[in-house]
View 1: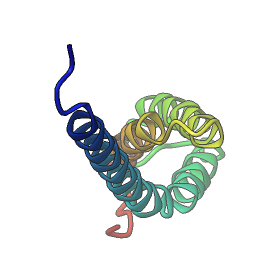
View 2: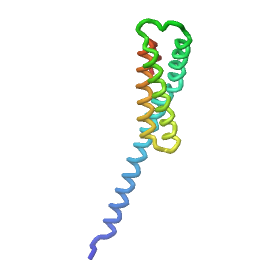
View 3: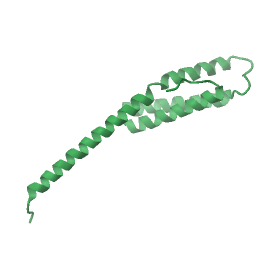
View 4: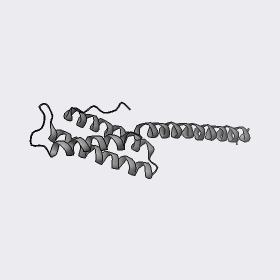
Length: 121
């Protein structure tokens, strides 16, 4: 026999509202991360791609530049960026943020291989 059933129901409703509120706050935080992480990626891709294209047309690559490593990192970064955009479009913000961060890391590696200074994000 359930004694004080209305109290249990009220507690369950309160807990449900608390969970919903925390979920909403977490989603807002993820959206903020997405906005911050994703904004510079297209520009970084463009900068790295332009430098790779320019160096690809020269007869000699400057000393210390690893063009093949930069090309590989650019391909990886572009793929990760596409994954990030797809995840974001599908509503999976956590995966989108993770993929965008990974794309940024790959772009930084490509820039280092090119001896290219990227703007600080």
